[in-house]
View 1 (cartoon, rainbow, N blue to C red):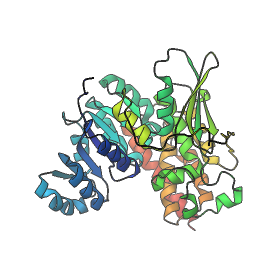
View 2 (cartoon, one colour):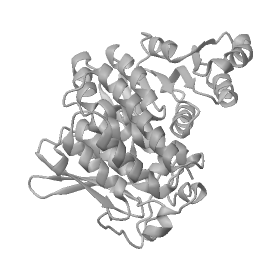
View 3 (tube, rainbow, N blue to C red):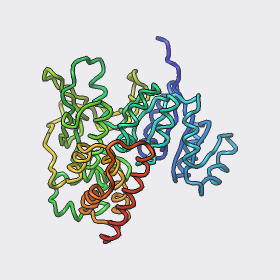
Amino acid sequence: MEQPPKRHLAILGSTGSIGTQALDVVGQHPDRFVVELLSANNNSRLLIEQARKFNPASVVICNPDLYDEVAAALDPLYIKVFTGIDSLCELVRDPAVDIVLTAMVGFSGLRPTIAAIEAGKAIALANKETLVAAGALVMPLARRYGAPILPVDSEHSAIFQCLQGEHARLEKILLTGSGGPFLHSSREAIANATPAQALNHPRWKMGAKVTIDSASLMNKGLELIEARWLFSVEPEDIEVVIHPQSVIHSMVQFSDGCVMAQLSQPDMRLPIQYALSYPSRIDLNTVRLDFARLARLDFAQPDLERFPCLGLAYEALEKGGNATCILNGANEATVAAFLEGKLRFGDIPDVIAEVLARCPFLEKPCLEQIYSTDFEAKRLAAEIINRKAV
């Protein structure tokens, strides 16, 4: 069988959880992938280490204060070093790049993702905030430029895999979630949780921001918004299901009542690799499921009383317009404040709800209005956080 041509990758956010696991996949398949571009925000040490190992044509260190350090370290290897988001947006357009893995954290991933879409690149999408903030604009843009969007989140990858080869009408998406570290905690205990407790996820090893979102179930809220745009379904056709074992990564229900699910051990390398190698499925040295030892699979409805962030996400999605962008901006600000010890965990949904109520609503925002909405939501959140400061 003829070997397919190598795919040339740009990995945005290469020093984060998704980026490092993507490079592990690349390291397992040097015959399949070539790294053209790596980028990081602040982790210059790891970026230098990655560049020395994978020898990309270019790297971007977004923090300009770290440029000299990275440039001096990589100069002997003739690797071009750039700084700033503008450089990143330009480099993702490079004709040598086939696929752009967008693994930057938060709203900051929107601009380079759009730049890559406009260049017609395949997008391996790990930055869910892109679709949460601007899904109504990004998906039509991807269709216009012929840029395929390949989901990397384990849940969306599962849905995507279940839909391969299917022509039946999709009736419902069953979006699973582990429930996070506070699944069985009281409302009072959740409200007073410490950052260390919230970062102690029982199943997944992830970056700090997404781990806190998982603890509040906001991550599931962001994922349901993302699923609405990725799979062109209505909000009422997405059901969140708590599944503590994280073996079923999501399910789809068809018009004949059939439910299809994607199962595997929790390992983010699997959905990352599937997006990078699609439509091929290639070997991966991950732990296999042992059904003889898999004692049980549990399912439950989410408790919106103890996890109001998920309810806020449903409300923002139903409202439409720039409401999901407001939600996302307020959430980013509150999570950062919580991790810095400036906000109680229990105050996160209260701040988000107040920002949603106060931030100007736009029914059909343009891209510039999305950027201004994010700014205003974060400004309002900072004002409220200062008022509530612990």
